[in-house]
Length: 186
Image 1 (cartoon, helix red, strand yellow):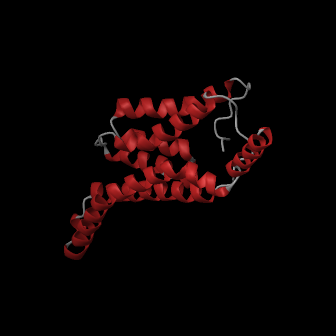
Image 2: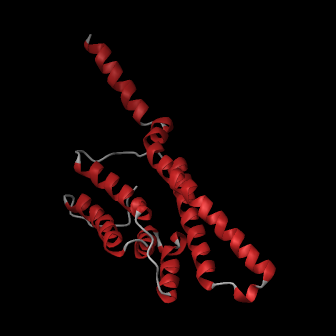
Image 3: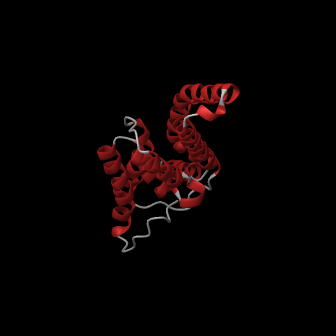
């Protein structure tokens, strides 16, 4: 009977080290990103059609706010697509931290940063809008800088709270080990 339990524990351990288990663990976040990406598509298509109409009729009256909003939504959609791809192709984790706190910090940090787009959209001045566009580009400035740009566009107080919490959780997670390397999480 004891040998069966040990064999079952060994199979569970090998299952946890498989890519299938990793994909199933990442599936809620992949579904979350796909849901919000799909939710953005109708507005994106409407704005693209409106820009096309302006270009076909008289490009000189094309509002810059519309173009910037379209670019912003395209960048956000690209960010969500990158997240989905990276969660699907990432390496299998080699080790995990013991306890509940690191898991809570990882989940809360991931979902809080991704949920900023749920907050109501905030109109910005053209200068702040350009700054938020520049800060949102994840290829150049990294995920945290992108989250700052998104937080600027959505309900400033709550977006700032979500961004600051997202920035603070990795520091809390690594405080026990004596390191505070914010950008080195896998």
